[in-house]
Length: 521
Image 1 (cartoon, rainbow, N blue to C red):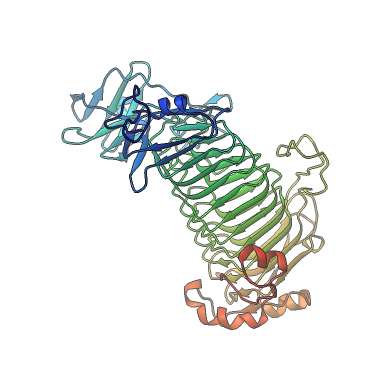
Image 2 (cartoon, helix red, strand yellow):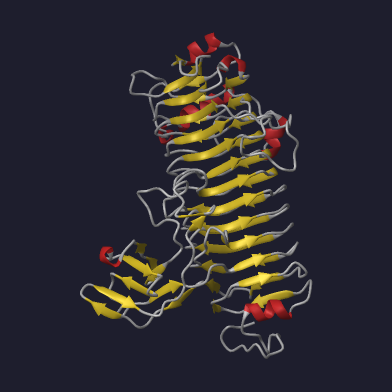
């Protein structure tokens, strides 16, 4: 197919291409391949359940699915310009409420409204009335069907989103590869610009940018996302729910939650819920507003390895009411929290670089939630209640062979803040790490160890004091407070005191069992 030179009355061959992807999907039979020649396709496509297809670009040609249309006619009024007859009016409803305050930060009240306007390819900021419009902003008046912008359109390209979704894949085994998706005004109900709703779907070598809500959403088992670039999504880059066997690898998922929704209940780079056998490897999930990688609501058997998840507004990697996870060989620096565990069990945190986080390097926490209590949200409907594999009770945590740079309040912190379980009963091991010493109260505590009163902690500020606490807590410290960038020599020297990699962690990071190293490989 070819948007330039094609016709939907053609045969759909190289010499007689179709014009639209919609027509190509309708014409294709199960198992066929659709090849898009270079160009920009302004389309919204559904791949039905009875058609397993491959949809890809022609080799070495650039293809975009674009959800916006050019606007050419404006009338000027002072320092604003108005376009009339704009009928596209997407919904701001999230979970049954318009502009739902559970998601929308009052400091950013327009976040849930999917309207989008682009000025020379750069998104303008939406405001709530025509009177608020100034340079760099726009107002969408759904009642009067107008768009008002604060930038002079003369000599510039102005476009606005008028499609909600690029591709909704409802068939098993479909492959999407080699094209770009941009500027879709997706509402929360439509979920994402790319919505992958069936099993064993693959998306690779795809760019998704400037989606109003979620860039890519996964809703079934066996999905692989490989070499994606997902940027500037309004709410979140990649979302996944109920996806056993999910793989997200070799991807750039950055600068998402551009509308600055609240960090919770959902936002940021990648969020996965109610999934098992999950692999998130070798991605860049940095500079998102919220968390870079967040696994929540009864995830089990998770491997998060080889990622750079730094510079996020909230957390680098977060595991919540989940179990059996390996978090290894990642860089989690320059945000509020490096790694956070909430009500998580059987977790191995190995060989990460963790530094300059404003609050905690590794935070281990327990609250009131228990999987055995059906009234709490977050159960996997495919598992029983109670489920002995995912208890939501913080236990069996190993923090080993990590390099902690300077910054923040605590390098490792463990506390039950609600149900009176002391850290001594959480089966936490802290060994083989290289810490920064705490020589003044302005520097981060090495280890904070929670008591049974839900508030008090005991501070361990030297490697010697940690060893006195437990003979298993053999760690090293730098000679002075240092950022990670200055610790290379000491990180190398600390390898002799590292914990040898257990077989499961070694397999996850591609190293021999027993390898001793501190920090990333």
